[in-house]
Length: 626
Image (cartoon, rainbow, N blue to C red):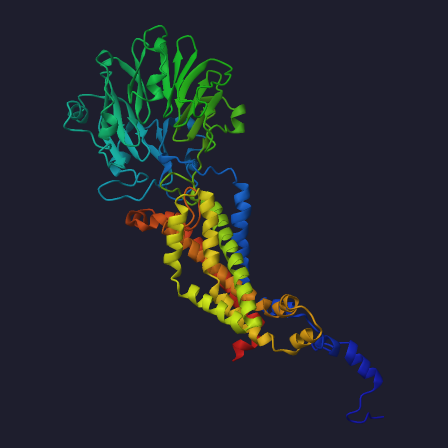
């Protein structure tokens, strides 16, 4: 029997109500009600750009806040000028795979600020690490690019300064490359000894190099030094030491000389602890010294009885010699650390550990070490089985700044500061804007007139000049942290007028609606009407503007700090890390010091703007169709 057209049975009605047919949903599902917040979230997550912004925000938040917790031991006043302005790289200790197991073929390993060079027994060189800096015409050459004439020669002696290298071949020819701002890579031909070394009439026994000067211990047992005049003028070898020097241990401002009679002389800056704490018995012949090594501020000496003597600065506990089991065979001085190798093949290291110099690899416990080399916070140990073990400064992921500080760590902590400053500033400005905007819109009359004229006055004040003036006048007498709090307040107090006017406009619309009139007729207090009935209806709009305002506050803080009126050094922020971009030299040669912080500022601001724009569209999805 055919069903009449247009009529639906009771069973079909129930089926259509509760059981979806094909891709269509049931009538109840189609009519399901959603809260406004669920609707907004639904539309927000349909926006690809909004999701990208949210992911970016979460990533930056975790990077800055979780990262700062992990690296919470960062010292704000830390500096290490030996690794200043080093390019990004974490391969300082990554020697070539071709050297693996070939420790027996290595004659010597020398290290600079960010690189190391192995001199092989056959006179060839292997270099690894990261370029110290970009070659600046007239001042420096690339260190990692070994000159062809050096590669073609048979090198017998080599030494690395912080950012330059010296070498001598089997024919006595001298080579130098890298930083040469003080002519430390070239023999001084105006001296009495420079032409002799160049001609081969005076052979080189050992090379020495610091950041600003170079030196030679020649076969005539004399020590010759040249380079930065302000450093080398104080390096005067005593007359009784001339022609008797068998070994030297060098620092930036002092040099310890071991003479052929086992006594020690110290030259250089007479005001340092190198000199003032020098043990007299090491200079009068009471003790016969057979070996010496030094850090930048301490000296370690070994006498013929196997006893160690140390003197100098107390800063890194370098004077506290650990308990050593066995007879000392070799001494090594790193920039901040001292090390010894015993005849049993055991290594002992003590001193600073800011770059993990004293963290001896666990595998060395099972290896008999034949030789140990170290300088500029890097150590290498060669096992009798030919194995090579390296520890110390591995490098800097984002490079280092002008003070040798790790930019990666400062980016993390700077992000926490910048994001917090922006958040507090937005919170302050939002509270002020809501109080003024809602009061003006709801009460109207003279209240509206007074508050809006006050808002107009604040809006007419040029923001940046006032912020700079307040920061400069008030902040000069404050500590770094108090100035940080002050920057938050300044940003918040001066950035509320826009949101206040927008809030007032929305309140004017909402206060005439029926639900407000009904609340008034029921005798509900005005403050409750504002906070419980009107505010929830404009809260979505406030959230959108707060999100966009957050990005604006972040950029403003960066601008203030960039100009030197925001967060003060040494406390890091992305803005004050950009300060050095005001120097053309930094822009041209040290791109990582300004480009990386700038990228984080841009990404953070972009993420917040994408979130705000997506929220705006989610709250008014029909706006895109118009």
